[in-house]
Image (tube, rainbow, N blue to C red; front, side, top):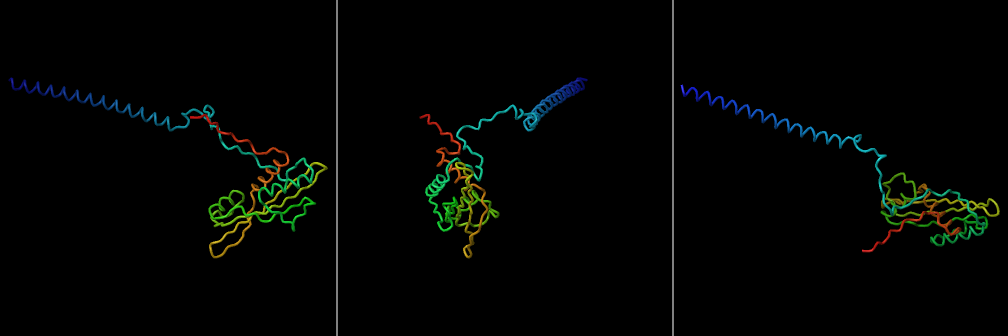
Length: 221
């Protein structure tokens, strides 16, 4: 009799223990699932652009010291200066840039100036970058070894004071594979002409059209 009662008691305790373990497993599983759901919801919110603040509510500070740029100057460019003053200024700018005037092709009295070819880049690395900067290159893989340009400048009078100055650059690049090399004409993007006009305007008016760049302040150690 006692043996049977002991067996029943053991079975009852075992059943209680198993039930308790089952409840604990359910609680742990529910807590873990809740944690996963919360983490998943957080990930969804962070990955969903619509849950972030709108661009209109955010502001960006790009900082100082950024290079300021301007639009290209009109070409032809109208200047308020006498024709002879402009022609002298053009010659000064060319001398400063070490560009030689082709006297045989130019007519200074008529305000028509043609320069000799001016080499502005040598070497494969430098030439490729410079041609890409000032010209419209059809084949970026061309092996350029040298680049030059020729300027044609024309001053046309509008009245006694107003004059229009047009500048055209003929860009040429020497390309080859070591066996055959040739000069190829590269269409100008207008950069060379714009840079020349900017120097001419500064020479005539005393003011550069280029924007003033920010100068970093030295706050000391």
